[in-house]
Image (tube, rainbow over all chains, first blue to last red; front, side, top):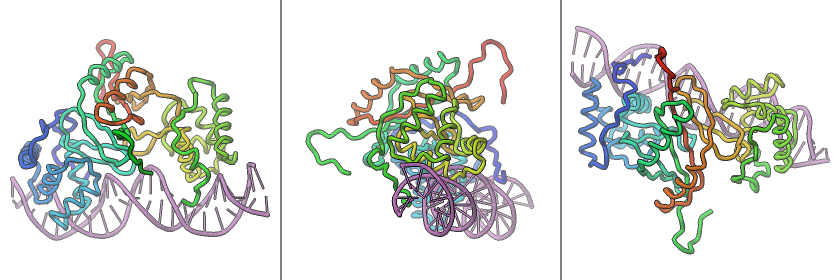
Length: 168
Length: 168
DNA sequence: TTAAGTGCAAATCTTTTGCCACCCT
DNA sequence: AGGGTGGCAAAAGATTTGCACTTAA
């Protein structure tokens, strides 16, 4: 707890940023705004992370995010990456997933959507479907619970259009 | 890969053992049978793990499983626990989950069911619902994928029957 | 007999932290 | 000025692995 910052009040908020498919530049602006709201210093490193996050369209792990950050600022440390991601996660700016099992993978929190992991390539496809929310809320209620959150991940193999050589 | 064993052929099979709510003794018998099928030596330690797995009705992590195993055989090592669980997982005998984030949690693979994590107590409630399978298969197909597997976890807070003091 | 299995400790890997210098506000 | 921050390296925690010894088949 050497870096408690003043997140306490903004901790655990459920709001997601209204980031759909806006251009990176706009995301950057929005993330900086979020930092201002959080009363975080706008340090050079923080800005680098923001830039990396804004340009992501996949779900990289911490190591990969660090690598990308290093391409902008070669001396940024892993600790900073972890600390920043951790703060951003608690503030609801990014979401951390545990897809494979190895290391956590991140993405910008952008409203409710789900993931389909391509077992062949490891790629993650995002998709939306409002059907689940109501259905799952009902399921939880039947067991006596208020649905706070849920995780839904599909694992699939790409359908082969016709006869194609399959790997492996 | 110093212990490749002969799992290769039985690797990645999708079949789950038909273990519903059968008594522990029967589970033990069934797991031993599975070991025979896998051509695994029936060592003392392996039997201890089987016994522990058979008596579980929760979702303990490796450390907890080791602790329980130690109550039967105090000299069983963590390495053995990990190695055995790993083999069992690859053979489809147990399933490993990443609920919290800390360490993996295990359970006997017993057909399709889902989890609702009680945010208040950390307890995990299992439930079944055949509705999802067809629905998700369709969703995946719409994106051009064959649904191989999926993960669905609900996080909820227990509904308070009436007026009760809430924690936090 | 002999390959699989085990224990132990060291090695990996990911993520967190203590400490101190430094920069943003 | 002063507290939030970043870097570095050590720490922590989970899981894996090399090696020599046991043991099931």
